Length: 112
Image (cartoon, rainbow, N blue to C red):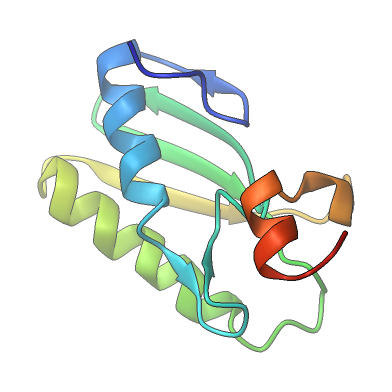
């Protein structure tokens, strides 16, 4: 049994595990950690033919936002096939904070 992701998920649980594994493959190139561990994923909804992903960045001035959005799209299409349309929304509310970091990310970033 897969543990629940650290973000809200709506949809087929089997698909949720695949989406979570896929999002773990999306790496923030500035921090060299995946977007799930960094707490950048705010929620996922899997519906008929579409995956909606809500994310944030650590800063509104993040220079890699477009890169990360494109990687999410690319990785989800690769994993789920061209019949699924990923829709990625970048949101700023609530603002990201270091409390969203996983224990692994805290250790890697020496945040403790």
